[in-house]
Image 1: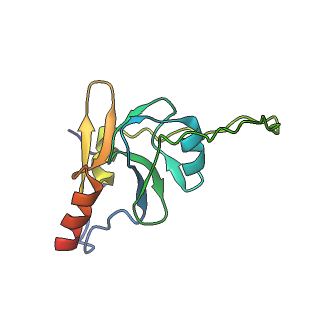
Image 2: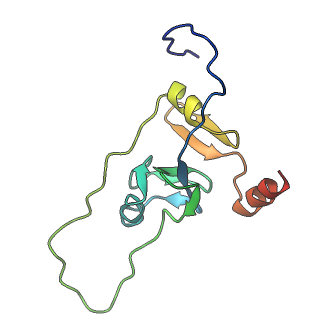
Length: 138
């Protein structure tokens, strides 16, 4: 493990924590472009379409407190073909963090999972109901 060091200095009080929340996946499966397009308006993405995800995995960074969203939602199909406006889905490039940056970014109730192929940021308690009960006890 390593860390970037700038300089020594006098104590400046408490270390500030992350001021924004994250959008967290409610389901396990593959992320769909349609669902990611709907959530990218709310924050900066951490995932790409087709990426395998599971419940409690972060999907985007937001300016509002942490919220849970479906990343697997499918577009509703109708019996009639509606003419489109000729535009496809435009997705932003997802944020890819280094291990060092991810460890600095997480909160007390979150983990960084490191595998040979990916880094995942997730909540410690995967089930939303259990997580809410644990938060209400504190």
